[in-house]
Length: 296
Ligand code: A3P
Image (cartoon, rainbow, N blue to C red; front, side):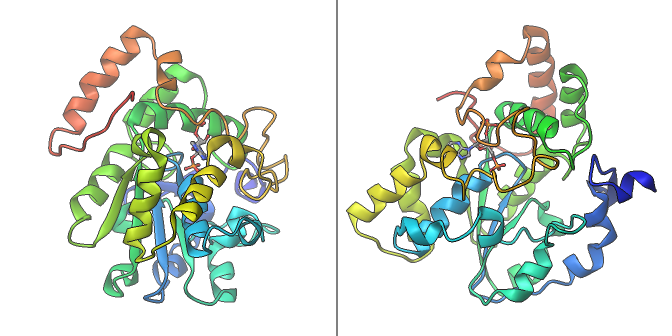
């Protein structure tokens, strides 16, 4: 269709019940068939949970805090985005992976059950980042306005319902955070929270370091914390997605590095919306007890 051929506002197509950008759905078989190396590291998130932040931390940890090395290329070239398929010239995740030698740090937004099984068979390290639903939703709302490859977000009121109904790209936030949570012990997944990272970034950087079996000295850790602060990353052209042309990411609408805080949701939810959201949340999350915080 015309919509599919254009670079803009791709429709979503469900893959095993989960709505994905049509180009991902069209290439699903090759994505599902991807087989990682045991040394590869997976970074998995629901969109807008803090993916780029953790990617930068992991890259610096793997390179002993060397800022120059971390600036060798934009985030999307340093860490292939496993399922991403956009029309040329944007390279697909799989084509980047083919060109890179393991160990690779691979980004995905796929729901747990859509992650190629090789990651678990090969016992790859996997880091999951979760962010409280309300801030995650607000961040996604702004992102969908500026990212011209995503469906139109429409008005705020309706967007909340799309989020609650799991109709956004990559599906239900609720199922996403729950599935990885349930699998985290069996699969040895490091499950992190955005709010913990804001509260005490050094503690979380050290947690990631230990998970990766690394041991860096205190000065290097301090440097990594500084290099991965919101303000530093916002000004870093290799981390702030300014490499993506305006026709795809229109950062004049909303910058990729937007606010980077916990609790921005209070500026968007009306008291009625908040009540409705909380009621629905209780039901959708009743089978788990994941310690999310909506303020710190
Ligand atoms: P906001 O829109 O709330 O500002 P992702 O990388 O998964 O797409 O997530 C993007 C969100 O993480 C954005 O949230 C962005 O500002 C925030 N973010 C990126 N780097 C950050 C950092 N170093 N510290 C805090 N938040 C960061």
